[in-house]
Amino acid sequence: MIRVKIKKAIKKAMEMACPMATQDLKLNTKNRDAAIHAEHIQYGPLNVDEPGDYWKDIAEYWNTTIDAAKKSLCSNCVAFDISPRMIECMPGPVSDKDGILGYCWMHHFKCHSARACRTWAKGGPIEKNDISHQWQEKAAIDEGV
Ligand code: SF4
Image (cartoon, rainbow, N blue to C red; front, side):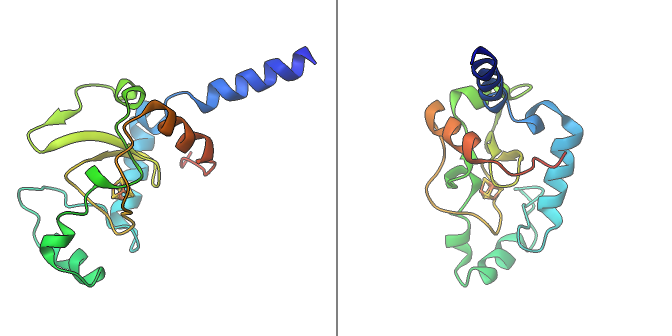
């Protein structure tokens, strides 16, 4: 009985630890690069000041306007986690002139609020620790290890 309780407590503690990609640069880069190159994700643009055709292409993908596409960013995506606990998981400062770094629960890497991707979904960001925990509990998918 006690052993079961300990096992459950350890499992819970591991589930609530910082996502591995926030602690492991190699894993984060691997997952981010996969999100950049996957046809169905296309995370970007690389440089928000020099986006090239990024907004035009993603607007075409969504059958919408460039203006509408530019309003569908990581910053307001349902998977974008900037809860206090996640900010503490980040290895350094998270803000710059364009926005803030957060964690993407869909693709498991540190993403920037001013970028976007093709799997964007309305409803974010995640700003509360309890919602962040819920995403982590349900994120039973492989983090890319
Ligand atoms: S937070 Fe949303 S928009 Fe940003 S990379 Fe993740 S799924 Fe895409």
